[in-house]
Length: 292
Image 1 (cartoon, rainbow, N blue to C red):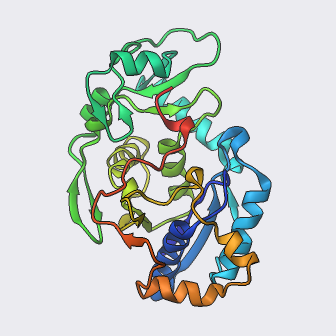
Image 2: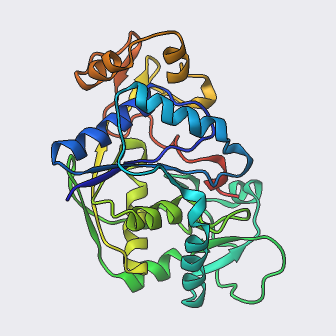
């Protein structure tokens, strides 16, 4: 059975880009007579707010999208994230890091999909830890143990996994046991997701997620990375730039069902267009998941 999910973070109102992504996931499941799940990714500290989570539910209903079962709260899975991180610690695949973002930016010699690539300052430290630290994946060791990997995208075909471009990514944050990369990989497995539908801004991240699946013995889904809704200047819609929200449209009396049908048909509001591969990429992870 096909199982898809829409997994927004409740750190701001949904916009048309979220609507497009939710419709893609919903329709992909319904086309196959499968299940469409809603997961609220609410572990982003104080930025996750209950009112945005509730507004998400109302926005999706307004668009005519019905999910199966109860909405899932990522915060209910923190213990599972911690258990997985502990396993990686025991296997000496992660190490503690106290480097600041400024230190990383100053020492980095290249840029990866998430920004400046960590230069490995703390790599190899596995002793006692005092105080809050981030936990980084020893990428070279992880890739060696996993061996060659591939993953399948329904739009872009078979991909050879190349997570090395990210360097030693953060898997455990100072304020949470799971970074985006670890949490989303674990949660998709726990939810039985068979097809991960999401925007092209997360295409590169899939290389890391495929590696984590191998290291943790998790099932491997297929992926479907769709184009992004972009503004006239080529940037993707974003909460922090004040892109028009679905809640504002809903409260103004606009027809959500008609909007959803227009997005399905590619009839976009003036000033918006669908982006080509990679356009607008690298703008999706929360601040908490960027180099610390």
